Image 1 (cartoon, rainbow, N blue to C red):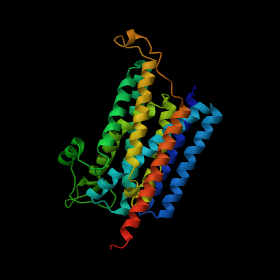
Image 2 (tube, rainbow, N blue to C red):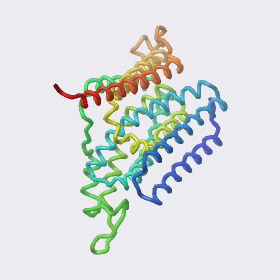
Image 3 (cartoon, helix red, strand yellow):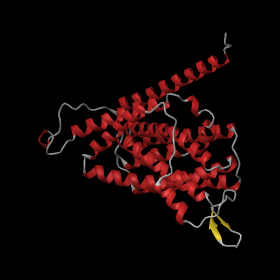
Image 4 (cartoon, rainbow, N blue to C red):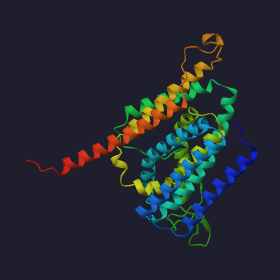
Length: 331
């Protein structure tokens, strides 16, 4: 597929307008959204993402649309898993519920800008060095194994070096001022509020998550346009999903296990693709490995969707059985 400059421009302008409109709506009124409001927004973003997939089908072909949908579904699922850590960050920094929307949205915008840079670097590296697939594949397989090894542990958040450094060097007040980043201290001097530390924590944490999610989507498509749009649509609506699922995250008991299967599958797919395009001189004499099978995007989409569906069903069944066991009278 060949994406023209005009299509890139229109896409960037459209997505930027969507993000800006979301930011304006949040800035006008800080509040804790209702379940109905969150559900409507999440459904709207899901519909927009699927409609964009339909546009890709009409504009290009089914293969492009399939790669986009598989990438979007994988990124969206990983974003849901990341909400566990966002809940911990908000709780640790004691952000009031009515201000959490703005904090989340600004943090998501920052992470989108950083991910855009990562996508550009990753695409450039893959176009020049096919052996990068070995690294991406190995990273995903390692992550999948680590997920299965620690899936029973509670999610943890530890302040990274940027957050600790920001606490020491930035001129900050000792308390929040609603959802403002800047305020005035007792002497009338302009100072940052501790909210800047929260934004840095969310933005940098999401970049760490990108070390898993971006190699995963590169395993499904190597086209920057599809990767970028799938990533943006996956992250849009994340703040509403945060409030919608905030009280239900503990019911998704098998989410991490399902994501481990997905990451492991894509990791193996990446290694097989690297073998099929091999040019490393110390491996098979620098020639492609003929026995490495090709996994089509249709198979990939079926495995991803099927695994996530089974994960959701198993989690709901477990939650219902646990609820029944709690209310069952003891003899």
